[in-house]
Image 1 (tube, rainbow, N blue to C red):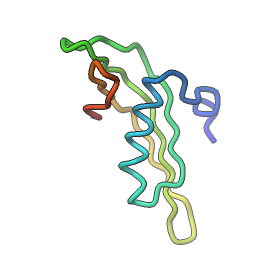
Image 2: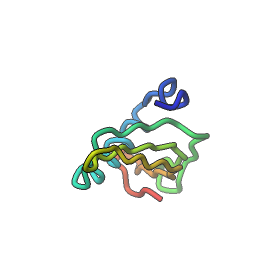
Image 3: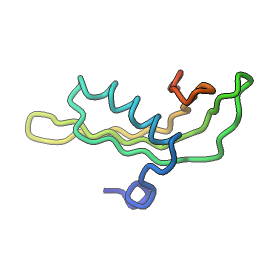
Image 4: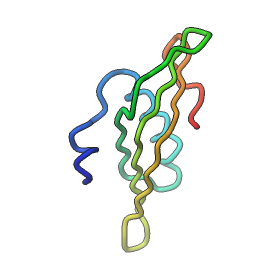
Length: 87
């Protein structure tokens, strides 16, 4: 596991909510692990929600191997804490 992900386990409700949303979307495609960590400052949206960058790594099970996908994602939550967008 990349040290950046090992040290930055999801902390806070924001990252946990974003990770859960990504994990739910990746599960039908064979995801076996989803790691997420904050990648910068959050900013308030006009409707009272938050938008922040997160680093995400998804590991998928394949025939005889694992496939790893990593990306920086902008995650947006509404004022109630529900994920409304992942970009």
